[in-house]
Length: 88
Image (cartoon, rainbow, N blue to C red; front, side):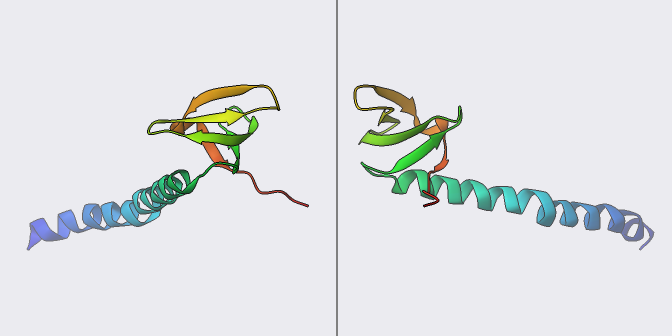
């Protein structure tokens, strides 16, 4: 019984860390993966570098994006920070 009383604070600390840190990060990662999987041609995105671009072509591991009317570049899916929502 004494061992249980000594381990109880550590068990409680681990439980608190799980619900405060680990679980929200897992949820956020899942939402991000769903957002990236749902992107299609014509969607506006913001890259990790802050560039606003339009998805031109969806590939297995990459997106081809248009930065302007003449420039199309290929970026990794991990480089997508978020979907761009117009504030108009």
